[in-house]
Length: 109
Length: 114
Image 1 (spheres, rainbow over the protein chains, first blue to last red):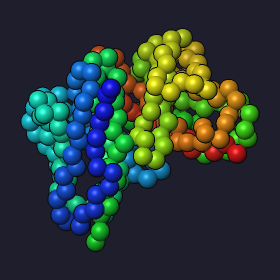
Image 2 (spheres, each protein chain N blue to C red):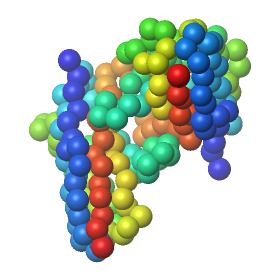
Image 3 (cartoon, rainbow over the protein chains, first blue to last red):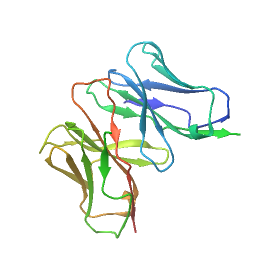
């Protein structure tokens, strides 16, 4: 079966750095996505990785290791508005997105 | 700005009612999707469509049907609503051929079946 694992919940302090991990086992791999979802709202696109390595976009970075079936999302200089759920999704060999259950990130002052 | 619009943010329906959820996108995307999202379960695919009048079952199609008569519109139908269909429903679209492109989501419809 296909499976994506991420921690259910994490807590971090404003101004700090947090790393949200995602491990996956899927039928094929055609890219990995990270989405942000604020409570009661739709998911919004954050990042896309298809090759190994780190992709940096402002305060957010995403890393991929295809051989390990592993990715992480790194958030720097945390702000209160970063409190949200972060969803990891992998595009499989059929070009379907397989979604993790999401990680709820709580930012404390 | 690209947009996926869902007709209702909140709906309350009675058990046994036929329910229509509408989704319209203005990006000329070929692909459209319906998901439901429940706490702890992530996004689960109900149905998707790669073209007009075309539909494919996702992971949890039972109790649902869809219609895509025009490229921009994808409707989800609950034939006879039941309480276990109380959920957040999300519509999404994506273009064909641009693999770096994820999905654009609508704002969601929170459906309560009583």
